[in-house]
Length: 288
Picture 1: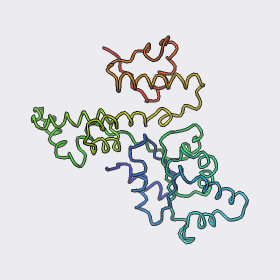
Picture 2: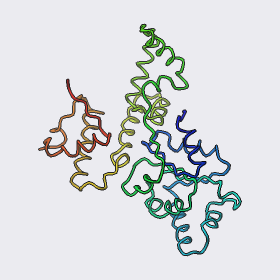
Picture 3: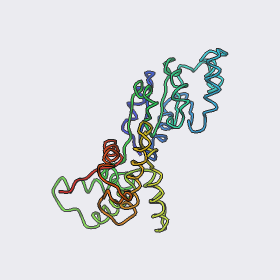
Picture 4: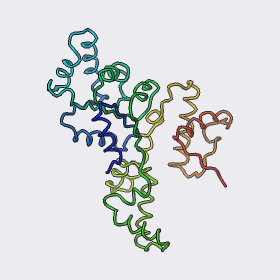
């Protein structure tokens, strides 16, 4: 999978900038970060889902003045003291660690170190990081990117050529494109989900995987709803659950507010629906 922003990210890090890669789970943020680390002489990688104790020990030692920050990097990052200025620090899944966000990042920022981070959710607590970093957002693949991936590149070229000339696409190519289009709709253009879906040949298991995938992309994994009232949080979850149950795995093609729960009205759920659509969690399509 090619990442068009990789050269720019590399140049920014070389200039001691902080870079944050943001996007849905499964889009390749960690893959991109690890790929970027190959371009530098020394790279230290942390997974913020697992290294909180490590961060706490490092921060406490720094605040107590036991060591200089450079000495801490040597001790805790296993870094060669002669290469400290060349090291790139990769912090994966920073939205999983409030301790990193609130305590550790400010120290790295103050010392003007090369930092590459990944996150799925842009939390309110991450404002400092977002304001002081270059933000790169990874998005799901477009249908044309699906058609022109490494395994189907020739097919994409044929489709593009015929469309440019205004000629009908050959039947066998059209049939294959429709198959890919169905896979694209099911997996939402998420590379990790697409690969897992294709590698499963059992029809029942495929359907089960699709259901699990939709549950995986739960509301809290995508949006920061911490600032909403408890009532609005509940209504947002009810809207999302209704879309999942009635439209994604059910037989309904339209979203109807009264199906959310008994006594539901548009006025009651308007703010929740607007919040979800304004933040691109749901796409509102109007009838014409």
